[in-house]
Amino acid sequence: MEARRSMATGPIVRQGRRIDWIERSSIDAASPATGRDPDRNGDRAQLADWQAKLAKKMMVAQVHRPVSLSDIAGRLGMTVNHFSKAFRSTVGVAPYHWFMQLRIAQSLELLKNEDLAISKIASDCGFVDQSHFSKAFRRLLGVSPGRWRRRFKVGMLTAGEQQLAGELRLISSVP
Image (tube, rainbow, N blue to C red):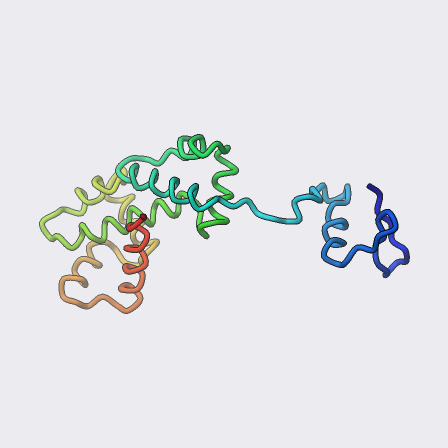
């Protein structure tokens, strides 16, 4: 199907039919120079609701060990790359980041128990060691696990820490 411009600034005419500006942007984007597919119109891959729920449930089931994106993608009938892009587009974060948030959310509940060592909490939440856990925790919450535990004990968590902790708890309550 050939498209041509009737004038330099005028509408594009395809087989005698005027094309509006939305279609025109997809035709212009489909030029051989850009290599873009005109049928995609810039749409991003999305997971269906059931796919997102299944992926999250599989990650929750694997929280104590390394996540296998290839297993999850295979179960959904996708490549790992397509699954990762679709998950990010649907959920808002990459699968690995969501999985780390899930692990940190579980650790928050365990940190409330002062009898558990931080190294035990780290291994229970699937981290390789306490150092890996502490770095991930600090990166997400801005404070070390030990300091968070002490602040929680005396009721001195900042509003931001409380809000983040609440948001993380929502992640761990996957239906």
